[in-house]
Length: 361
Ligand code: GZL
View 1 (tube, rainbow, N blue to C red):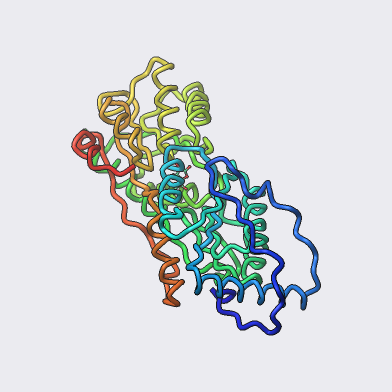
View 2: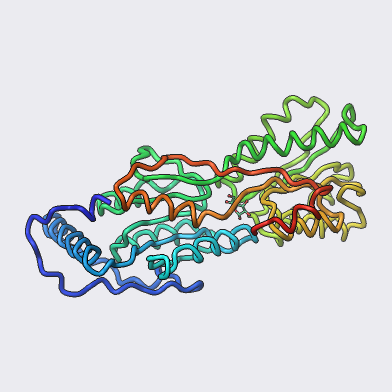
C-alpha cells in the first residue's frame, strides 16, 4: 500500500515491466525466481520508488491487475484442497487479479523462499497460509521494507511486532477444541455414560500449527472439568490420512480400552477409521469407538452418513472472498480489521444427511 503511493524522489526509467509468472496449480513460482541482484541501499530505495511510480501510473492508466503472491501450506488434506480452490477461484484475471501461487509441500523453508520470490517480483500483496506459527519475523520485515502488505490466512503467526502483517482471517482453533469437548459431554449424557470412565486418544495435526495448538489446548483445558476422562496418549498424524491411520494402528496395539479417538482433522479421522476396522473393531454412533473430528469437509458427511464418524467440528476454508474483501478495502485506503474470525458450527452424525446438500465444500 505504502509502496503504491510513494512519491518518486528521482524518476529512474524502468528497463522493463515486471514479467509475472502465470497462475497454475502446480507451478511453484518460488522455484523459478532468479537470485535477487544486490543493490546499494540508496539505489534500492530509488528503484523501489520508481517501481511504485510505474505501478501507480500503470494502475491509473490501464487499470493494471492487482498481483497477489499466495504461499499455500501444501495439499495435505481435503480442507487444504477446498482452501486452495477458494483462493484460486477468487483471484482470477476476470476479477482483476493476477495470482502467483506456491505450494510449500508443508515445509516452512519453501514458504520463506516463496515470500522472498514474491518480494523480488514486486507483487502488490503477499498472502500466507503459514504452516507453523513461528519463524516469520525476518521475511515479513523484508516484505515490510519493500512496502508490500502481508495478509495471513487460516493459521496464525507468532511475531514480535504485529505491524509485520496487515490482517489475519481464520478460525478460532481453541474454540473448536472447546466445541469438541462440549459435544462429547452431551453425547455421553445422552448415551448414559456421563459417570463412566472414558479413555481417549488424540491424533494431532502438524505440531506447532495454530490448528494443532488450539485444538489440543482447547480439549485439554475443558477436559479438566471431567475427572473420569483420561487422555491415554497424543501423537501427530501431520493432518494426513496415511499418517493418521499409522498412529491409530499404534494406539490400538498399545491400548485395548480406547473409548474415543479425537482426530484433529477429517483426513486423519478417515485413516483412524480404516485402522479401527482393520483391527476388527467398530466405530461411530453404533460402534465401540467414538470418532470426533475437525474440518467438516464433504467426505466427513459421507463418513457420518455411513455410520463411521460421530461428529466433525467445522473449520471453514473458504477464505478467498474474505481476503479479496480485505484487499478491496486496502486498495481504497480504508482500514481493515486486524483479526477476523470466521463463523463455524458443529456437525453431528444424526443431522449429516440433511446438512450435506447445503455444504459449500
Ligand atoms: C485449519 C487448517 C488445517 C485443517 C487441516 O484451519 O490449517 O490444516 O484442519 C489442514 O485439514 O491440513
